[in-house]
Length: 130
Image (cartoon, rainbow, N blue to C red; front, side, top):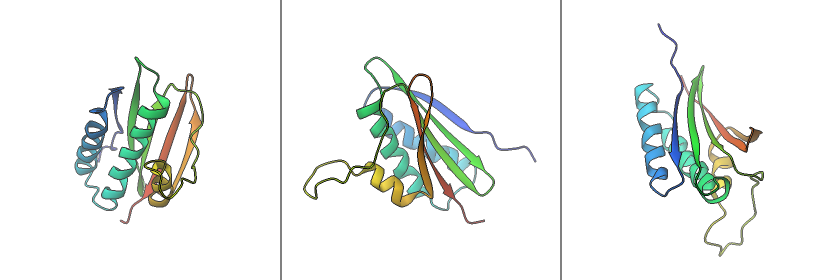
């Protein structure tokens, strides 16, 4: 049996990138036969991509979405060239935004931020039932 290859795609800094990234991920999960936690994975892709577009992708640039299957799970990475390190804010209950990383923290098994040159990679992982 051949090992399953990761999938990646580069997206421009535009609104259409969020649904396109979600669909790209949905297709990869379907190809790999991943059904367990697919809703959580897709929601976290939406949140990480939105954060990259709003906070991490400078004008004229884009971001890379990488989805990696591994033994017993799936890892999602969003690579951007922006400065700063994402952190979980504690938003006001009446605030319109600021809950994306709270969702990622709640839905994924773990998440973190890594360095890249330039920028960063924000990732999350999901263990799957076998």
